[in-house]
Length: 115
Length: 119
Image (cartoon, chains in turn yellow, purple):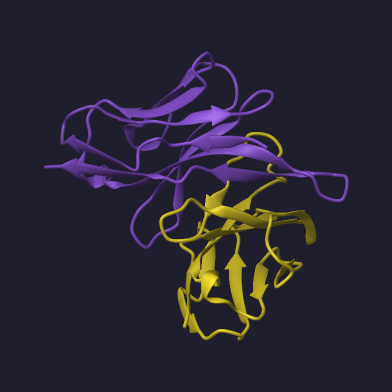
């Protein structure tokens, strides 16, 4: 079975632009979460979606938005990019709503560089 | 909010020796704890989890972790290190996120520990 797939793998943007990152969860998984990993730090939670509804949001500005589609894939959008948005963006999927003891399974991420 | 701390930025160990990567936690209630590994230019791979039950949890690739409630620790261990174990290791705790009254769960990660296994 395919794991979590993310696209693109690398992206270079300039300040002020916007970006869309994409994620396909493991087949059968209905929950998708997004994390931002700045170099030298652990991942930080941005959003969780379950059954196409936003179920959780981390401490990120409104420039960050996301959505989940009927096939459970997801997009993360970031507007008005800042230099500080340079990071590895990770998508993780799980079957349920991270309620019990289900581990999240991560993709390889999208490396976003802002010039 | 729940949190985890990884006190060591880097751990060096000789191949064949036992390894330990340390993690302490701060939670209210029962902790749900996880270990993940990250290889260069890759995402995170799940190693093991502690929910409840035995204090010694066995995971993937020969790793295990010891949950110690009195010391609020969840250290990752392996009896004999391999060069291929060299990677970045993250401890994480399940944390509640209040949202629209319903709430959700997220993972809160430590800053990571770089493990280098020397041949």
